[in-house]
Amino acid sequence: MTEKIEKRPAQRKQRSGEVVSISGNKSVVVRVETRRRHPVYGKVMRTHRKFHAHDEANTAQVGDKVKIEESRPYSKLKRWRVIEVETAQAAV
Image 1 (cartoon, one colour):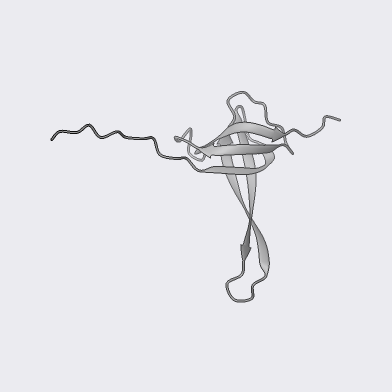
Image 2 (image 1 turned 180 degrees about the vertical axis):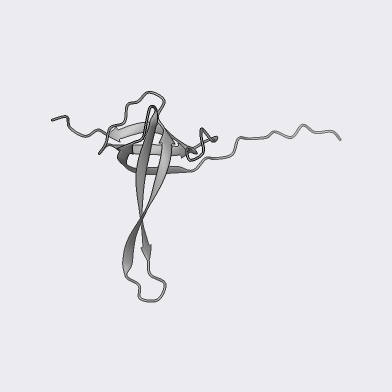
């Protein structure tokens, strides 16, 4: 009667966005844009939200497209971490 219940880790949220700022060591600000249809008029509206993310390797630069994932709190504002840099901005 005593069955062992297997507990699976929860699926974490992931977002893709553009790095708009490097805010200190191992920290970036990522702007994530979403598109929603207006409930009454039906027009597609673009909205954005900024997420503070932890970048352990300091690989992301301003203008890069990155993928972030929900994680444990790193600080007061940082609750996300950079998983990968999808496209890097060309160096001038």
